[in-house]
Image (cartoon, rainbow, N blue to C red):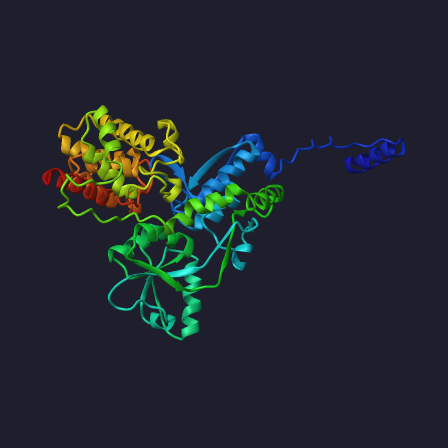
Length: 460
């Protein structure tokens, strides 16, 4: 009997005896769904960008309309919130679908083509696409057809490209699309428009409105689209996470917390002027600067400060308005941020005396942190810059100055020059910068307050 026949014969015998040779059963592997995975690792990971709507750091506080919503969602889940900052727009979807992040938060409108790539939460906001241009003596563009042969700068690989192609088709003319190397975000391009480096860019209106508060020479009134719904992106397979997020958003969008958040980021823009003209430098100090002069004097005297320095800051911040509200929730005459004020025992409803004294204590604290600077004048300027931007951003400017060969202990014509660099991607995304982009007015802020203070001293 051959070996093959023997094996067949042996198998028949086994079968006739009711026996069989079986593989060991495969072990069942528990499939952990998206929400369970987040709960197990105790972390919700968000893919975001460094911008006014999404996420940024200001006065040593994490801010951002989307950041605050998702921070509330993370606390609702009982997990930590982790942020991954994205530069290249293509990386949002690739990082999401390779599970490097759980959600996309980048002020993202819902587009049909994007729905093929990932899912969306229910909308939590809406906005329009607008043309950003400088206000000038010449009339600004309101008729879209006048964009013929104009250069519009947008972020490389931006979804705004589709809008420009549609506009070209609608007006039957060419519009030249330009991009800047290094993936600058919309806020960077708006700043370039403001400085006159480029003529036009496109932005979502909600971003442009915040930026207009810092750059009053831009016009954002020319609409380029219908109203678009904005939502968070997530993987199509993450059904449980979407259910949880949508349920949270449905309740949150009806809450007082959401109404306050919108007011914090958008409604105050109409009330606050961040570029305040100086009081006439010829003002004689025998004339009262404000109804709060005695409070400034009393607080400054306790710490051996010139009360006019304190008064100059208060004027710049709020024009002596104890009920002022500013961007990011800043409040009061000295515009304390919500994370900083309580540590100085000052709150939105604190009386003017408490607000002023808290401001003096904060200024004194910042001044003492720059004790390595010998010149009092320079030290005062570093103090002002830190009060405006937060010490972290000024530390970044100091490190940049040192790296680029400037004097890191001198503000004038040295560290102040680095403020602009903190809004340029090639600097703010690389070492030695640690705190990301800064697009605020620290340079002009220091100049305005210090020059006003000195003029008051000279005219006494």
